[in-house]
Length: 277
Image 1: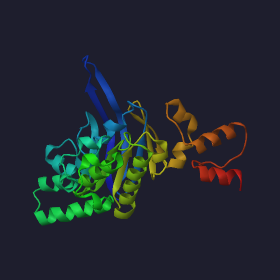
Image 2 (image 1 turned 90 degrees about the horizontal axis):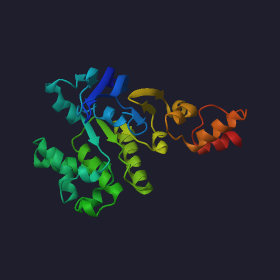
Image 3 (image 1 turned 120 degrees about the vertical axis):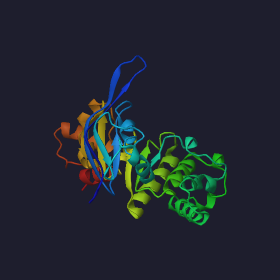
């Protein structure tokens, strides 16, 4: 499988309000393959959002390097092409919605690419279909629910036809129904379109559904593996202030009582089978 991104020895430092140099990312070594669905988790200040902004060159490393689709993100001549291929979706959909009608909002990106009106119309229809929002194309975005707004924001990115979707806590401001809608939409894009997805979240039940989970703490990657591998490390996750799925917590506590259970149980269904075969 081809590489989407390769980060080697990458660090990012910034200067705070008191003039101090602060390390937000430290010595990141990471390879992401095309078509992967990766969840990145960590507490506030762990560096996960800072990391996400390097994939479309919103931020550039201050040490080491970050290559996306074979292009160095620090090279000005590469930035436009990287941003065309890596779409970003943020926490608050209201900050990404710019028009008063849904279809006009989704058309905003393609229009800025200088495409023909026929091509733009086709892309808008395709993007709205991919997120299941075709029937709302003539609606006013401000009348939609939070989950629907976020799906429109995703459609606006998809209309640019990126290779990768980077979502920075896209469900943080949504209710459970909205979270379900957005996560389902993203999984559908990954499974049916083969899109590379980098999904920043603090909801463990969302991270469990990824192919691979990266755990960050104080600017470092501390765990990287399948959901089963990562969420079985209950003690490490708790030490850095993260929750774990209820099933993983129960298994951890039972194992401390010398009750023998298989490794890698992180869902309620798998726990039920293990306890009541």
